[in-house]
Length: 350
Image (cartoon, rainbow, N blue to C red; front, side):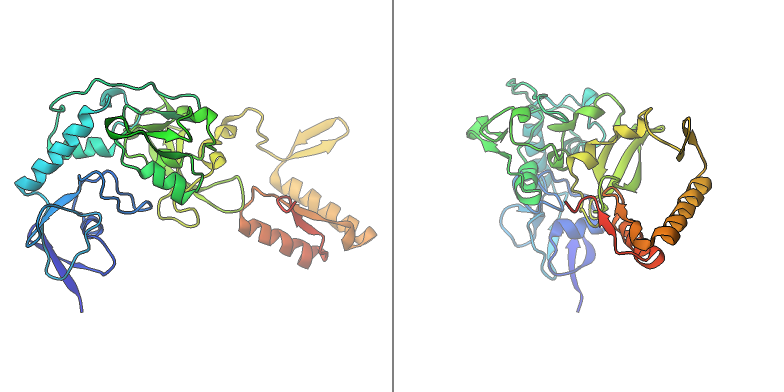
């Protein structure tokens, strides 16, 4: 039997096990939130996603509220809007949110919330700034933009389990720290970039992408990571013909948005002048360029000659760790069934 809730008077069918926020999003209804992420789960920290529920005292956080049949919810009552504006005003005031020059301008969840609530400038400012931390190889930390949502900490400790980030200090001095408040470049951080992907604002940004493109100037291309056989799904953020940044595809197998440091930041080789872009055949005077058909015919001919003269066990194959799993499978089929030898290995099996 289907169950219904009423969001702003609209009847919506829902499934058990989902929150009010999830049901609203699935039905195209916008409820701003900052501390919630599909992978890190409900946190009920930022209080931006509050809603008013008939028959319940106080405002409820929609990211953790379980709907019940017949529940009546208001997402835009004056009481709700006043509460959200108060929170967003405080977050904007307590930080250097210089949107015009910020790298995540146009893709910032705090900016989206302020726009939705009609906040053009915060009601007041708190002039207390910390130095940006650019000591790490690929990530810049800007504590002045941090809103203490905790998503980076959950990701670092509970998702990729590197256990580097944590809340440090107390009260108005609370901030996200690396290890025992070390610069990121001196900490145990492995630069996987999980914090960058989960951050709703510009507190963590990719150093390589700074100044390369505004978010609305890029388009995304989905592809598979070339570095190993896991097959992690990537979104290439491209301006013109140039990749400016890489993110993991949320909700996609097998990586669910996670990436290692190579998958997220190791794309420079694409533009290297040293890349070999065509097969090379060795001759007396060195290498010459050849077509794929010529190169493959040569390899097949040499394989057949060696097999006929010395037998199949004179041949061996080593599959590349940068090929996808399916290609390694075809490689072993080629050697076992076509060549007729079990001399097949993989360079990652050391």
